[in-house]
Length: 254
Image (cartoon, rainbow, N blue to C red; front, side, top):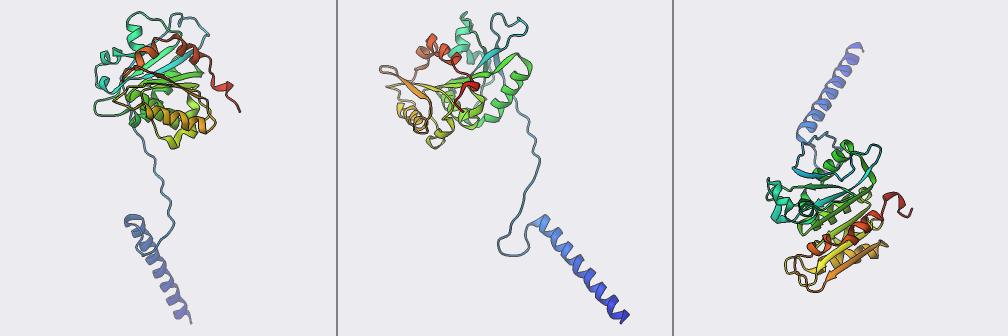
């Protein structure tokens, strides 16, 4: 009897060892049995991100205790690279270079060559985190705008992180219509040239309609005679900046 009992223990241990071996092989090589089974994957992934950018601090920034609104500006495809002078070609960076003063902190990152802003959402959000941690930022008033490739980037970044921006102004860009409902709480003012042959005006019309269909606050300005350059007139228009400042995240409808 004792011999049979010991033999039973031995068999059980062999079975357990075999199961452990099978489990170990399964962990290393995947399931060793055919059929479908439930699995759980967990892994901590760390990633280093970086980008070059221009930073503008408004006149009076030295005043203690005051927080400032932020505009993040995304340039077009022609300004990609590692030369920040290119970023000054259009938009707020160009105007600042010409002596224009803004009541905003202006952040103008540069996209690397052969990369698109829509692929840089992690970089852009990490940059905003950095700016908000190092400077006196009013996080209730963070605005996003961009032209052409930057217009696509504006739509894309705002759709991914709608709670981050108080308002957005994409220019001659476009996005994914099925994501328009994500912007139902984000005020949108989009711009496009009616004669744009690079990015058809339909791309902006579709996004604006998608946001409006979702119950959002979206409007569009079309320049009847403008081609792809619909940004010069837009950024020269003081109404845009007044419109930005009229919106706060905390004032959105609950």
